[in-house]
Image (tube, rainbow, N blue to C red):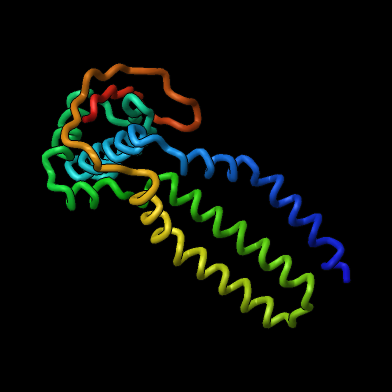
Length: 197
């Protein structure tokens, strides 16, 4: 009875607390073709950098319509080399490098799966008073779905909605050091302005 009374309020609270996440999903899934291309170039550049230098450094990026930000690589020469290496690959190798488990889309998918499964459980538990073993089984299943689906769904989302290799050629127009975003970016931050055709 108490669960039935609390469920609508808990559902509203979960939706309210996750509103920034929901709006972020909508924005991320509506990337322009140019931003999707630069997102692939950003991922590929970072992956090629890691391939050469190892993954000890914390490197991150963010795609824009006219290029991408890259944080944590200490020289423009290393950025140019990684960018060139990525462009030299065949299309399948580019996809293998561009689709990344380190992308923020994995976190978005994970949070989405978590929210949907919790809301589903709240509704389910409010209408049917399950036994403690059933609750444990339901929550355990949700945890397994969360852990098992976040990477495959995130990679699928990247390939079909967030990244694009639909270009003939790409080049770096210039690289400028820019201010870092506190608490988000580490080390020097560069904006890599690109020309993609």
